[in-house]
Image 1: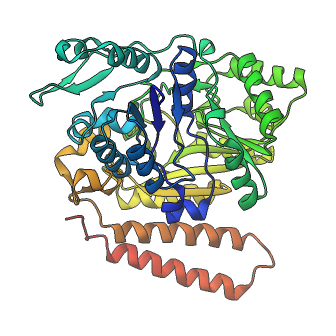
Image 2: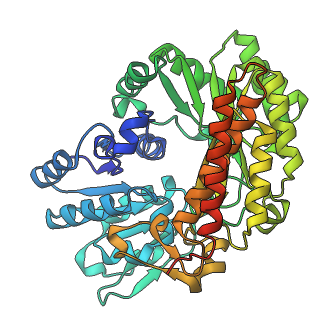
Length: 469
């Protein structure tokens, strides 16, 4: 039996939306944990739930000799992880949970049956914790538990204790690559290829984001930015291209173009080795300029995702985005010139949003013309300044273990129907602007779109007085 079994509770085939999308990526977080701990001499296995199901995982936990189970949890998987904890607890496993969700809800996860919650980066903490679990005896009580930095636990009386944080890893180059061999990564690539005609892999070049957007969680890496050397990243990418022959890649960094000098060196190393792979990434408008976009185009970037959030500068400033609307518009235009698609993230319902802010966002998207845009209604993630700002208005509709922060209502905010009309109006306006640019546009289609716009606007106005209970 291994010293540690790692899992993550994301079941692709149990999620209808994910099955429609069918763009799974390897769980790099637990694979980094796996490779680090294996290097330290621990026997570590991974039960990858992505293509499995909860019955298979539960059967494994109930039939194998129990040891230590490590579970990664995020906002999407809370309820799954709580159920996994219950089954593992009944089967006699020691349970450790980590990731952004346990970091914000440590006491809740512990009271659900976890023995420890790990805060921040898990590698060094898990190494010390596994060693301590192996060496501890029943007579040692809770003394050793209080010495493991970066963890939280309940004592024998059920009292919550949180130890001091652990220093983050300074030298990411010293860390081994994620243990992709511990899972069936070929199945990920093949799944992409069978549904999208292109197989894809993911990798990271850095950890953390130094920016202070008020709605964004920094539970794992804090507001830091630590980067691997360009040569080391290219080494890994070259191996990925040889081992898995992907058609495209996803750079999983929070902001790929933060460090311009790093991008220059990375591009030079890719050029030197004559390597090329189409990829997509996330950036910020204020970290994109002509030179960076030239290098991204040379490297093969086919799509860049830009956090726009709103077309209202007043709201962007309230979010502490540190970006101007004009910068977003300019970044999209510079991308278009280089034939790089632009993706835009937008957010309705941020605290203080008014009708004029919605109209500003519609004008912004209509003018900017991103290739793709996604909208969401803002939700407060525990541990963020935004959560603290609206905390007194939050309404929990379902028990914590059966819900997520996405399902929390904000009392007094506009209704879901209101934001649905805002979303419909945005898409109608954008479609109308696009069609009307065509000199040969069908007049009947344009008239239908005008009718749709009028209906969406009327719906928005009609529901303006509706608020969350």
